[in-house]
Image 1 (tube, rainbow, N blue to C red):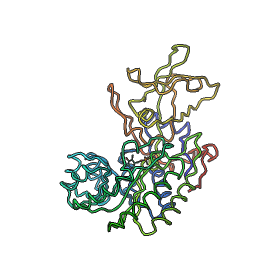
Image 2: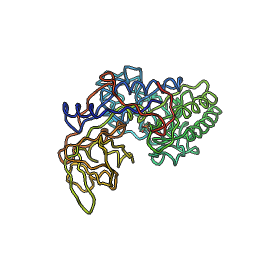
Image 3: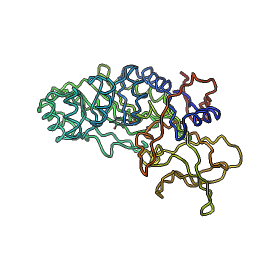
Image 4: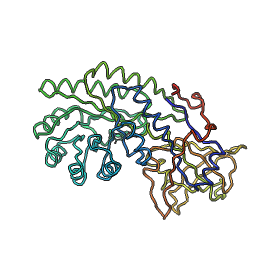
Length: 394
Ligand SMILES: *Cc1c(COP(=O)(O)O)cnc(C)c1O
């Protein structure tokens, strides 16, 4: 795993001066390193980037050039990839419940790989795209995940065989199974449980003459967060060991979102107002929960703030620029004394941030630029132990 990248104070100031704030600073080099890390650690697994994590064109194009495939959930995402020249054969429409527009768009664009987890979905797919290739999404238990997608998706083991049969009987091409252990999974445990569960289902399906050939192990790969012990090397090695043991001949896919883009983007935001209210200092920023900090609500994420200021830290409230009282990022968040115009750098801000930003109240979405480490030698690379993260350097 790669150490965190951070702009220095000088770089942050120079970029803010040149481009204004709020500003998203994208490193496509870091996207490349993240992709290569997964390919190196899980060499048999074909990567399908889940673009909902961050549909930024620079990120998508970087991954496309590296040979990545893509995981999409809507007509809009299919159209966006197609407009960038990405072939239909590299796209899987992995929303278990598809819209009529989505299926028509898939048909028109030649996208013919899907996931599903219900009987009614089989009928919908069979009607629009006869012979389409399908993976059944199965439910896996993982209460430890930061965002547990299994509350919403995945057929139970009890339903699985019936759903595979139904897809076959309706003329679809049943390729295999998929699962998603939930986002930001800290250990391999849930993957191992899911792999064993899928092996059993592969065997049961084979007994009925259905030879499954593909297994999609989903996303969920974590990025480092302070205070969470994550050993991604060990995690990926464990997953690799189990897929080799349980699925030696199966075609393997994955659908990482957060892991590929999360550490590749840094946000620069600015203090636009300071006031005292209820005995606490309030800092108003030019980016809030309706913008890139939407991840505070939608992604349950706790962002790291880099202040470039020394001095004693006191609990402060951080609010966004809109006129809604919901637009409060943090209360009682320790910070040094800040002034209007001070810049705050937010590293590891690439996943589920700008993707779910809105223009509520007329505030434009943060501008995004590509800016690479080659521009300077002064990128600060934090030591792994500072990040509570054990890793191998690239
Ligand atoms: C969101 C999503 C992903 C990506 O999950 P990460 O935790 O960001 O890796 C992958 N597959 C599907 C079907 C998803 O909905």
